Length: 213
Image 1 (cartoon, rainbow, N blue to C red):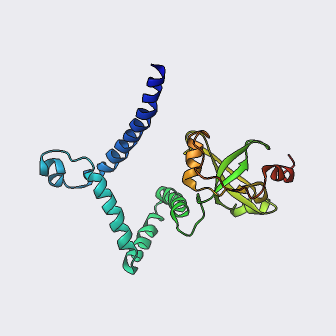
Image 2 (cartoon, rainbow, N blue to C red; image 1 turned 180 degrees about the vertical axis):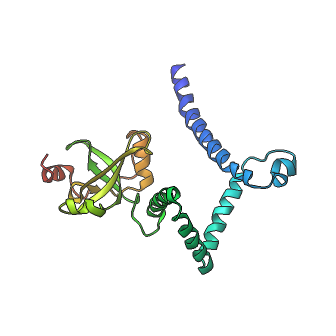
Image 3 (tube, rainbow, N blue to C red; image 1 turned 120 degrees about the vertical axis):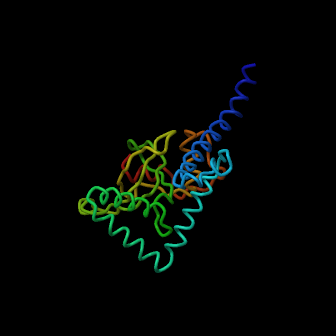
């Protein structure tokens, strides 16, 4: 009976969590229907609520926004809108910070969160997976001697929290692993390993020797 119970949990728990996440996402995106006039609300038009209709509306708005801002006139309007927001004291700091992060993460030309790295953390000899976020900038660069990179070390099993570190590039190993595979490996606490194995470019012992371990 214990084996049957555990087998049932292994099947139903992932399914239940998946459905819960989908319901949360769709429910949140359905809130976009509140932007419509009262008489255009689906509940008033059809007489009942249609789940997922707000999700379709949200995706359509995102697509149309991207389509309109790709041309010359749309680009001018976006710049004018951003210029207006930058003149508002509190809004300026929030919007500028969020835009910098979003531009870094979603830019097709950037490398943020597109490379999985193997780093020593929280001490030498203890290894974990991190994601490359860029290189140190500003005045920080003036105080670091050598080739340094910036990495994000996520926590397990919640990768949305973690630590921002700057370390020598020589002390890191770039993994031949996709970001999705690395995230699965982190979330599962090492239980779900990558599906394919690749030869390691440099043994860990060699890297440990270089870093003084």
